[in-house]
Structures are given as C-alpha cells and as structure tokens.
Length: 157
Image (cartoon, rainbow, N blue to C red; front, top):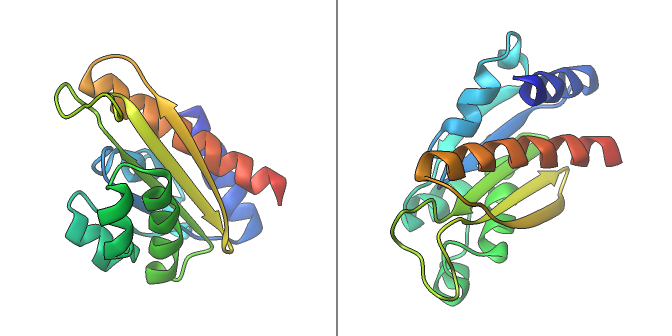
C-alpha cells in the first residue's frame, strides 16, 4: 500500500482530484486508491470500462479509434485517461487497458500487453508494458505501474 498512500497524499496536498477508467484491471486500481484513508477527498469517481461501448460513453474514446487501433492500444489508453477526467471533471485521469490472459492474446498483442494512460490537466503520458504471470499477476502489476505513472506525472508538474 505504499504507492497508493503516496499518490493520495500528493493529490491531497495539491488539492487535485483523480478518476480512473479501467478495463483489464476491472476496478482493482480504484480499489487500491480507496484502501487509503482520506481517498474520498481525491477520488471523485471511477469507471470500469470493460466493453468498447463503456469506453465510448464514460471515457469518450472515439469509435473510430477503437475500430482502427483496437481496445488494447496506446491511442485508446490516451483517449481513456483524457475522457474519464473530462467526464468526472477531475484534475487527473488514469486508464488501464490490456490483455490479462490467459486467453485473448495474438502475435501482435500478446497476453500481458498493457497500456496505461495518465492525464493531468490535459497533459497525457502513455506507457506500454508486457507483464508476465497469471491473470491476477498481470492485473496486480498493472495497478502498481499505474500508481507509479500517476506519481511520476504529479512529480513532473
């Protein structure tokens, strides 16, 4: 719980709010944040956008982006973090999209491929990872990496 504590502390100090748009983590990321006392001051909402339709509605991902690049892509992660922040009127949006496995991978998009997006006041960073392990391990590694990215974005400001 070290990273989520650091994130909530930094957000609180700056007076910022955060929202999440999660696909492969299915709420695990927002649950990690909620585990921290005082999270209610910074987490105003969280979206599990598992389907493409939910990505379009709650995270404002363009249908054309999903058709051209797919749900698991740098472009989708970028639009997800920007869109969820806009939907929730939050300072920061944090998104996860990937293939947790054990099925669903292809040669181009293997199991463990994850994109994490972070938007802070419209400035966006997206990182690509290929995690190893079980479905649960991929999801947990994604949460850790997402918390890291959010902290990095706050430290750059």
